[in-house]
Length: 329
Image 1 (tube, helix red, strand yellow):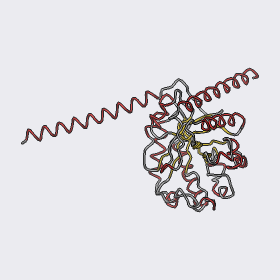
Image 2: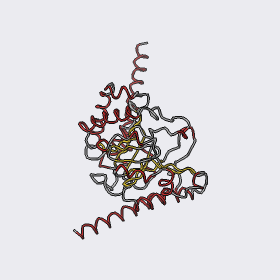
Image 3: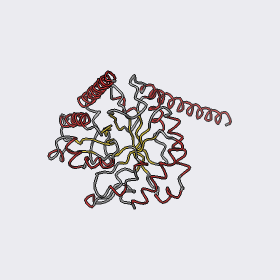
Image 4: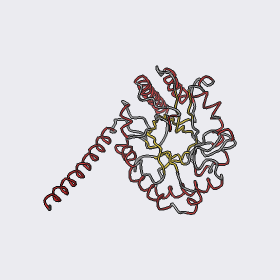
């Protein structure tokens, strides 16, 4: 009987060691895959393109690394640690975290009930990306317009003063622990319902809105720029006198040939070249919850090809501009 127990125990230990080895191998493969030749600037300057991912390996569909790698992360989930390390390793990309305080009352944030978690989070960010700026979009799409129907986030429509107090508490703490964090204030639409939630110029580095366009809406709006300016009221962001980062944009296509998705991608790159205040655009590459909208484009070879080609062209254009600027000096 004892021999049988010893054999079972040995088998269990063997399986556990095997699982650890597999995890370590997968983690190493992911991290090595992210070692690209392109290294970003120390500051978030110039025009930058990003992509929102779910799993670290999602970026492997691309033949080159975008400037920004973005993801959604809920409080207390610790789901982004591998992605942070991947971004920080060899300075592969600037991380952008859409940081969602799910099931966290804002009164508790203001009262300091979550300070231990916040300190741990900021230390983790600082340790993972010591040589990179880190972009955070906290509690986005916070305003509640009458035409929204009902809130899709728990913090949407909460008392604006409470929202601002929580925001300032978090930013003040991050400045002490991880000063390389840049904060993005990003409502759903720039309207009178969003303005009361603005935390103040000393607590915000970038402003933006969500620019997700569906095929049905495209009958009225033909491209990114038109939709951003007319429907999302993008021009109104100028009143805050902050650079703009669109940390979420996607196109939902009904066509199998993805022609309209390609045109949308092209329209993004066309617009970012001509708006001096727009510093970055991050493409949403996920299937939305419950399949309501499908924003994934990297499963289509033609879309990926255009996306990567446009990134190359944008980088070449910026190198030329930098060269001209240096010659003038």
